[in-house]
Image 1: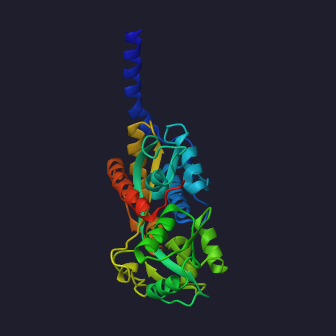
Image 2: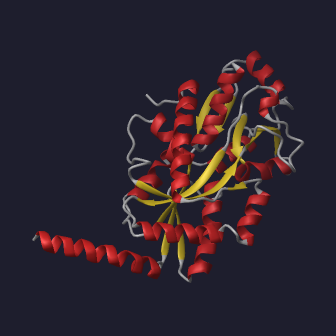
Image 3: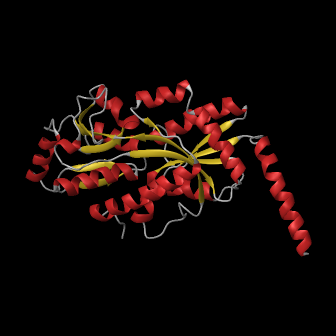
Length: 317
């Protein structure tokens, strides 16, 4: 029996490279844990479209929003580890949730194998037009004058994290309003139902540029080329900085040759005109790399977000 086990192991080891060479030979499913119109969904669709062109296979995007990405993460973690389910997600599921929730339906490290980083981006701080503020300093002054009356909306962990960290560092009292996805939060801001949002550029910037909302700052450490009209939050609140990222993962146990081939395919997709146009129009930074580099980056982000969650008091009871 032991000999048969050895023979089976040897046969499987020899089969993996061949399987990788044949990969993919059927449709690929990409799970996005946030809704249509979000930054994550937009990145997933661009990458999915390019993967389809490169492989000749159909690529299907499945949006599974809710519970700060937990629904989508659980579905991706439970998928077969064969390379045909790709999880395109953010720091919300992979670095923030473990610190916010006492129990998760998935483990961001044990249940997933990193594949490739995709984008890095700052946030736009936007307020409703009816609010009588034009700068971060104006908003802080109003919040201190009316403690607990101003509200912020958030549809993902980084959006909430940005607002909560701002609240703590600016020493103001704000009311948090959670949403299933960021476009819903932006919609309520435009409708005047909430006062401020820390939003990814994909969901929020169009409304700022066409005047439906007022942009007052960006969360990067330095002004963003092309958006110099919006100062950094740090110019008013020293030390403040907030970035969001997207990356691709597969279920744990996916054979390494397949992971490596998928990494190569995604990096090739990131050279496409559609991806470069996306990063240019959303002021994102291309974020490619090896699976090992993404694993190291995720570990550092998990540590960083643990401190942000603690300082901002974001832990759920």
